[in-house]
Length: 206
Image (tube, rainbow, N blue to C red; front, side, top):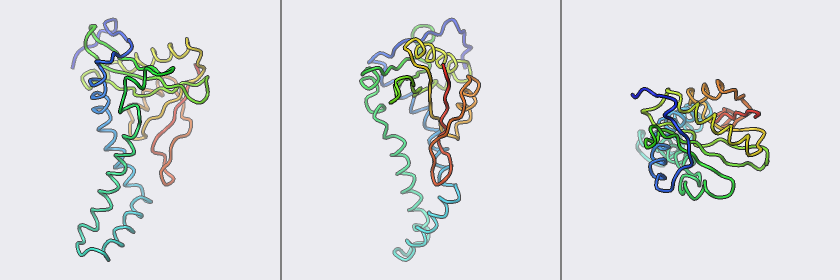
């Protein structure tokens, strides 16, 4: 793991030729969180009850007890993975974030090593900006890159006239939640699944 020298980290807009590298970094960062989130969703009591009911119904249609148990779980995992990756920005990240008032930036170490990224998307409220796609390369995590990107994002949003920042992070991502709370963000609702919060919303006035 490198030792980070803060004044050698700069933030600039992402270039088109860097799209694939940034997308791979996002996927790498999202992979662990995705698996933990799916496990969290599937192990909620109501989810377990639904899977058990479906499994019991399948046992009347197929002879294999193991298959009746596994099929509902596998189908649920596939559906959840498809839902988590349906965001349009991930399919065309450069063109998406260079349209309108959207932006995406990269943190660069020593002028050529991309170590993180963050994106801005305006919301239906012209005074509110959404912080999206905050990610740091695994070699630069816990070294202050994410905090640097958040500070840069807030400064840009404030200069553009936004009065508030909102963001969403999975409840299983304790590191992200800790970072945002340390940066002054407050919990403000979230997305629910069968009565359980799975994605926490945070907001901060600029």
